[in-house]
Image (cartoon, rainbow, N blue to C red; front, side):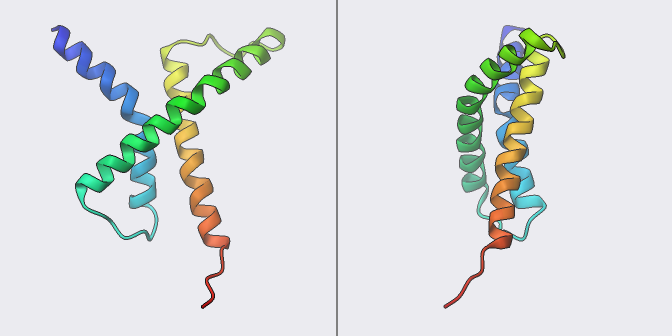
Length: 103
């Protein structure tokens, strides 16, 4: 039973990176790399999101001193991490769309 809890915790940690990678390769015209490369991309995105969620949490807690929205718990952390991952990928897709490729 403890193994199942550890697996679930790991999946929740990696979820934002997998969602971001799915958006990157599922909803864009990027060529799909091998499954290993997609897994590696999802792990890198998960790491980036985990790093970015630290200052995001501090900023949101600071804002919460003046205007309370919700309690910062596991659910709100997962939501913030997923939104951050989606924002990273969407900003990447937007920059690719506005870039002109000239030879």
